[in-house]
Length: 180
Image (tube, rainbow, N blue to C red; front, side, top):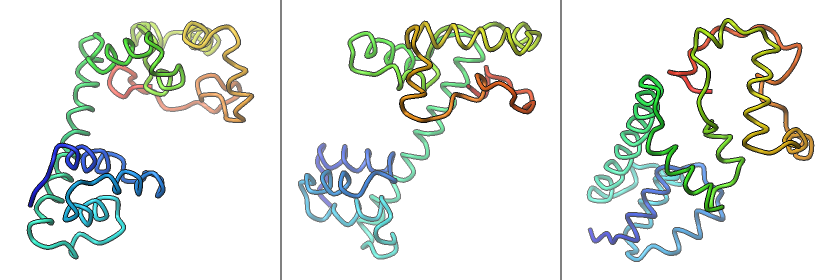
């Protein structure tokens, strides 16, 4: 079964983002160079069951699904390893570089939780709720500017849980291992 670099890239992207909007998926699938790879794309995003693929296509489908699962595991382990050793990982470093060039928005940086060093876990846990809120507010201001709260009001989305007053006490969580 012929598979080009272009087809591999599209299949890899679809395997990483199977819930992609239909129109966007169709746009990428239309760019597939080898027609025999189109059913694999449809199976990857769930339009057809994998059992409908021929044997050769099913092998390619299984390889891409396994690659996607392995990629998720490697990415997660890299994140945890970096947090355990108190260092930035290559994803954070690269995303920071792209942010500095204006390619990645502040919102994406916030989504990934890339905003600098956190206090040590013991010191953080010893802080009062007001002190914790001040830490997060300062980080948000440093990353998004002095009017960062307006971004949440304008988009009509809720503030992150750690900045909502009056919330019930949540279980303790190790941000170095589990992220934030």
